[in-house]
Amino acid sequence: MGACRGPHASLAPALVNRRPRTLLDRIWDAHEIRPGLVAIDRVMLHERTGAAALKALKSAGRPVVRPAHVFAVMDHIVDTRPGRGDGTLMPGGEAFLVETRAAARAAGITLFDVNDPDQGITHVISPELGIVLPGLTLVAPDSHTGTQGAFGALAWGIGSSEAEHALATGTLRVARPSAMRVDVRGRLRPGVVAKDLALHLIATHGARGAEGMVVEFSGPAVAALDMEARMTLANMATEFGAFSALIAPDETTFAWLEGRRFAPRGPLWEAALQDWRALRSDPNAPFAKSIEVDADMVAPMISWGTSPQHSVPVTGRVPSAAAAGLAPETHARALAYMGLAEGQPLMGLPIDGAFIGSCTNSRLSDLERAAAILKGRRVAPSVRRALVVPGSQAVKRAAEARGLDRIFRDAGFEWREPGCSLCFFAGGESFGAGERVVSSTNRNFESRQGPGTRTHITSPEVVAASAVAGRIAAPWTLP
Image (cartoon, rainbow, N blue to C red):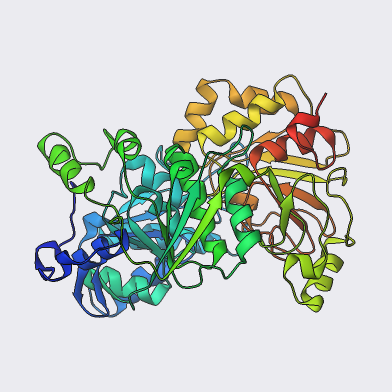
């Protein structure tokens, strides 16, 4: 597929090049055809919405304008149980799979079917395969598409009708968002990970702290993150209210992408690098909003309520409404749903389930860190269910080659096939009503993991430690 600098890069007015620009400016200016209309380089579809967009396009008599740049993935409702077939546990969900297969093949686009060796969660396999590249625009009908902004691409979630428009024209009508900078100074302390940084940011500045903006994460702490951690951070920008997220590409990015299936090669790779190294904000670029975060102040985090904003250090207590910055009625509802009281410590709360997976924390490094805690230990008998769901077939193969699957199984975790799984209640499986679950996912809304399920989102490490303890626990508290 090669590198893409944006089909309209050479059309950017010379005057624009003279003013200080953000990374968002550089990508947007290279893709803007006219105000409110931008070129789209990549379209990702999944089985819950992909067939609808492709079928509507076919009914209108329009072809996919650039089929080589469109990819369909089976991930949201696929069965993730060991030995799965090619279906789903979701009642009526088989139609989504069958129709997406047929529509993708008819349109001539690349399909990663249930048992394809490259199948996995959209935002995991796109980077793995080099579909997303620095400077591109990429859209998908999924709210966490901004995960891929970790590679310096402008990626955002859309609806089915917008997907149809992008498929037919290679463009989208969208108002230019403003840019926000989150500058993370210092370094994260040992045992503190990107998930903690994201929850700290959202808890401090609110779930609408970046509403409608493109957040550019920068600073020494961000530069020190590996690519998988950067994806976790960009993923959680959705829970910060952001339109999308960006991290300027650097040598870490380039090393990670080189040799990927759809990445450019040879002379095209060298030409791409030259362009990609210019993808950064000018030192004096104007941002609509800026926040500084002291990485040294970030602790291992966990949610207590029904929004990612409702988070505190794992050693903390349920805050008051005033301390949490919440309206009293919102605070009271969250406490009632979660079965908690103001001032109650989170450490020591008995749990019923544990889940490691999702587009936030299902990559190889996530599984390695969790397995390191579980090695030689067992899930507590009181934990009814513990699952680990790799983010892709590639992650699963790599984990199995390292023996991680054996560690998880020996500890009492189910070792699953790739997919979104119990990140949300749509695949025909759920945790039980009133059950308390520690989860490495990105959302803890009411009934997110099943009707009445109480979800505490946190890092894979805290999930693993809590599963062993049978209660919310930090890794350093285990004997």
